[in-house]
Length: 229
Image 1 (tube, helix red, strand yellow):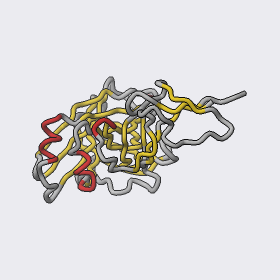
Image 2 (cartoon, helix red, strand yellow):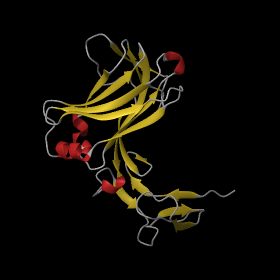
Image 3 (cartoon, helix red, strand yellow):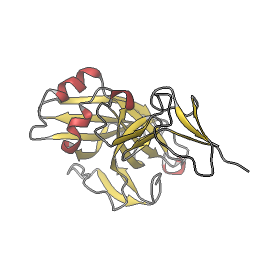
């Protein structure tokens, strides 16, 4: 039986659904550079539960209810990317129903920096079915403008916050990414374009035991992709 493959080619670190992604942490080596406060109410640890990319995740345990900062990350290395129009942050979160006694819980990302101030990106209600779910926070245009027009300063942080009515909580976090929509990428800073199939050609791709045609199906950049039968 023949196989049909649709290609849109850009050599880059990661391309997800037409979106460029810089992976901040997959927690394959523990909790990495994440840290928490020193009041003793939050514990960060490595876990295999909740792993959605690889085999590791970060387990967050909080011993009090209500709004709480869970984890900090020094995001200076991603300052320029977060200052790009359309930038967003995503992470996969797992909550086990047997480990949760409340009626609601949400999570949010905060961008905090010396030159940008405290910027909560809004809460996402967490699904509590024991499966990893991807949640996304889009940076508002005014925050992106502020980031792009300033230096990181002495601190520039990405912060994970959770809020719940439960007396205690446990969540598992994995695959934290910074996303940048492709339409905002110019000059291909993440890689070299080797084919977008927009100019009525196959961009130099040669057939080998297959038949190549251009197709609108599978296009992630522009209107055309390469169909391989």
